[in-house]
Length: 294
Image (cartoon, rainbow, N blue to C red; front, side, top):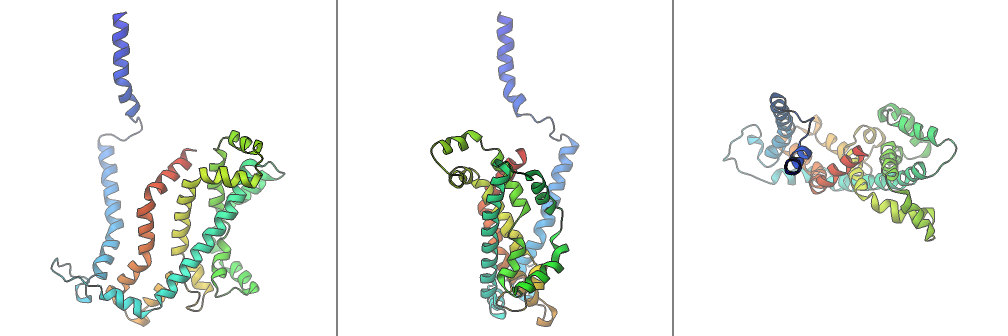
């Protein structure tokens, strides 16, 4: 009996080690190569941003001269702000991403709830068509989208930029997978209390999927904040032009190339996304890890 007890005690001591070890984790040279590759990718990613920061906060003559004694200045940001209507560009972009995200969340939530909890004829086929949209590049539909916007009279308007993106197949898929993991018993309990289907959705499913909404919101906002081709095609004036198109026109050769001013303008346009990601990066990563596990 004493021998059995010693084996059990030894097993209990080794259990945390066994649980903490990962049989698929790289070891030896593989771990070193993986770490070196991660460091190399991080350096390649940070170098353009580091150059933009250096050039934006230094005078033009120090753009390619990395002197630690070079004076820092905010004059480039002032010049960039005064050289183009960036206030209008920011307003247009904010209205665009807000409109797109609001429509995507409403339509995506309703569609995902229907696919996850309602049985109706053709549900599998309809969901397959939604998934098929993920395999179609938006650039393929540029010509047809432009014809549609022209017929609707939405050329050179913010709704004209947003309309092709108000329904997101990725958002529907992500929310459907999340809703399917919510226990059906919560749904039944809410219905016993007299809640309608819409009340169940708003009071049970939406609150439990909040991390997924945050992660998807970051993805949607960053994509449409940086979207360039479609806004370039469909806009002709400052009144509807977003930041990406305005920055391209601002940095064109006709305006003269001053890398300090261009870098300052680039930082101004990308700063909101960087701040948003830094604030919500933990929720962003954890949400997609949970979605992947599901």
